[in-house]
Image 1 (cartoon, rainbow, N blue to C red):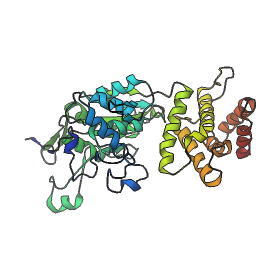
Image 2 (image 1 turned 90 degrees about the horizontal axis):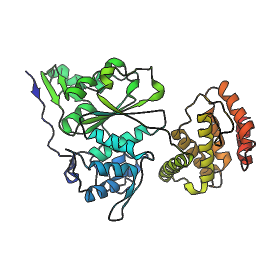
Image 3 (image 1 turned 30 degrees about the vertical axis):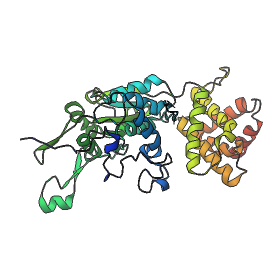
Amino acid sequence: MSVSVEPTSVDPSDPTSADPSDPTSADPSAEESGGSGASGAGEALRPHAETAFAAELAALAAQDDRPRPARWRLSPWAVATYLLGGTLPDGTVITPKYVGPRRIVEVAVTTLATDRALLLLGVPGTAKTWVSEHLAAAVSGDSTLLVQGTAGTPEEAIRYGWNYAQLLAHGPSRAALVPSPVMRAMSDGMTARIEELTRIPADVQDTLITILSEKTLPIPELGQEVQAVRGFNVIATANDRDRGVNDLSSALRRRFNTVVLPLPETADAEVDIVSRRVDQIGRSLDLPSVPDGMDEIRRVVTVFRELRDGVTADGRTKLKSPSGTLSTAEAISVVTNGLALAAHFGDGVLRASDVAAGILGAVVRDPAADRVIWQEYLEAVVRERDGWKDFYRACREVGA
């Protein structure tokens, strides 16, 4: 006989009902920097979204009078506003977490409001993980119910494991069972996250089929099951470049609504994304402010986009594309590293010499083929471009 496991009594749909014993519960009084959102959060190198943006989430919750799905902290409108940014009636500014088509965010949010799981698909560096984290933070107030997909991810990471000391001493019991993040999300009506779904072996992926279709997780050792309570859902991410690694079965793919996150449409949009993200990272690392380096940020983005697209920005010159992805995330990394060089070994102003080595490392992944592509680009495009002489010299020096 099957026995259902009762969910917890905390109602995550009410911002005032966060479990005080849960260290991941968002504190509405926390500073945006995460100083008081969780124990030790002020020292965290990279606070969770619900901690870093606790003030914005609290402001949205306070002014959100729209209907909320069961156990949601915010309404779908407020979740979309949290991700896309905006100004609330009281003047509170919500910073954009995702810069891209509004409809993509709206489709993702409404998917989570149904009984369909959400699959965020895209090439590396299109902010899949970032969007997943912020969606979970806004919907459930907790982005930490996470399964990281790898080639070695076991079935227990999605279903449940066992405390073997308890198991050997007392046999199978609830006390001996170690719930997975997915199991906890089912019991509490929360959002679980699965990163790099296509990296997980196919037989482990299929563990999700019953969870997503029947909304139950059988525990045959105990003759019990966990039934998902309202509010439960799953956000998975997958990499376009990983097709063929562990493709999703048709049965599993049908359980997801797929939303494709595109690369930024324009150079201006990508510059905006890079500058915003670098500014956030830079503040946590006490690096120079981004406005002093906007010219170099635009250069990095231009180089990445031209080599990625295989054509110069004016459309006149065809280019060979290197083997790397040259994603927006990699541009953010190059600029952040350049700011660190400028701060610690320069005059604090981001210059061409600070980003040249990072660009070389991002472009030249294959020492043979990519180096030839990079040298051709330098000589045919960068060398002839007005105002880029310092950039050309810096790239030549690091590549010598």
